[in-house]
Image (tube, rainbow over all chains, first blue to last red; front, top):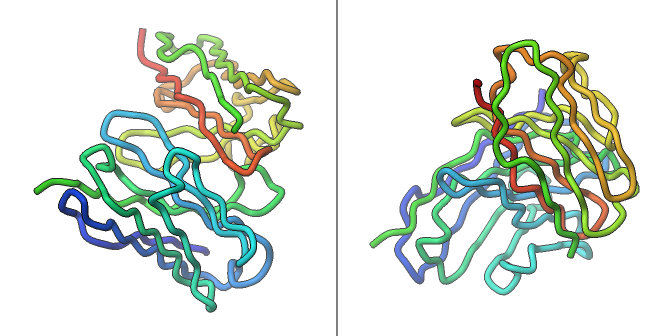
Length: 120
Length: 107
């Protein structure tokens, strides 16, 4: 069974960089075609798609975050990373990683999410 | 960038009620739409993929319909476990945007 686990600092200072890792276990996602994604949810609010990594040529970001976000996947396809630069309080959220099966419109796997608070 | 408009934002319903949630897209989605259910403190759970396909293990009282720019999630007979927030998400463009969410609460 595929499992995803987000990890990283729970507290980040304003103007610093938020860095998270999603560790994926389960052999089935080492092969095949997937969109490796990050989604976030500010406290009490809705889901916001951040971006995905499909392959080295297809990495896409939300237009509202594009200038500050980087998503990458290691070559073993077991660690998905997220960096968000110059954070503010508006970046406080639960951050989820998700692996969507390409062409299956939502099918895939989700992590449990990790809360990141931006505060001094 | 495709915009998703979900309605209503809140819905009050009783056990046994038929519940309908609508998602409208700013351009055609070619059925690349999913519906998720989320409960507090949990990750979203997939209910419907490709507009009308029921995910395995999801009760048959959930159904999806629609095409083009307008899609609907229906719960045929609301059960206690269905009180939650529901989101649509589109996969047609390079930005996988979500709707704003619909909270189904007890009437």
